[in-house]
Image (tube, rainbow, N blue to C red):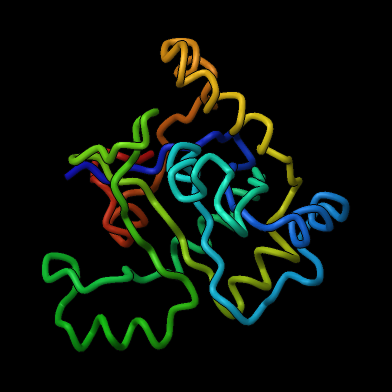
Length: 200
């Protein structure tokens, strides 16, 4: 099973996606970060994969997920989240014991979840896993106040690519954001359970 972070990124930032109803997305776009009625008390999930966001939001059509945001984060903040995370499920190959894993759940503000990457037809790829990060507590505060560089409305792009999938899959594939492997230090890759080859 190949676990790799693929993302739109540069030397300083990484893009992640979130989908919301307009009442949260529109004020966030105007402010350049999340503001009321965004809630700090709930876990918020960020996703580097455009196609996984397409799958989760139904190409930005599901109720409460009709506006897809591309959020450019500081790489330093994103890597803080990785370093302060724990896997969302017990993995005997990764954890010393189930008790140790449960203890890490109580102390970590970030959850790592590896879900099947999607194709243009929103079909799971059985051997490729894509990252989701669940942020809670101080991680949400850092996300909103410290890490966000800018927010873009990716909804028109989501709708455009969806329309292309119905008539011209090659053009749709070419229109996807250029998501490349995100470099990780070996210790950080091991911490999140990424495929060891994804290192700096």
